[in-house]
Length: 166
Image (cartoon, rainbow, N blue to C red):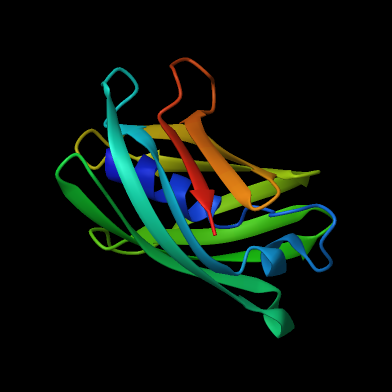
């Protein structure tokens, strides 16, 4: 489950808006190489584990799509990430993401509000079958971006918090 939460948080972070004064769509401005540090929890009640991440994001203007790939390490593990995010217009976004350890891709829907985008998504626990709703919110100040992920119902502390720079 932590791989799922961790992976979606990192992919979502790659779409952060570097500066509201820049021209172009939020996805276009997110293109480039990013590195970050922060923490993640294996589950809502677990202790924080330090993580380091590197991401590469490429924008395809004709499709208004951002493709993201990267790798995060922490807690003795390494997670490969990949995803695609599309600006659907009027502040709405859709996306798919995956980790190297999972088959298929999970869906995300997002909404932009200024320098922030909040994605909602859900994940099924492979052992129990239980479906849990999560949110991932991004915020950017100039050339820095931050990401936070938690349970959609806010019933537990944040599960991921990572700060990135170009």
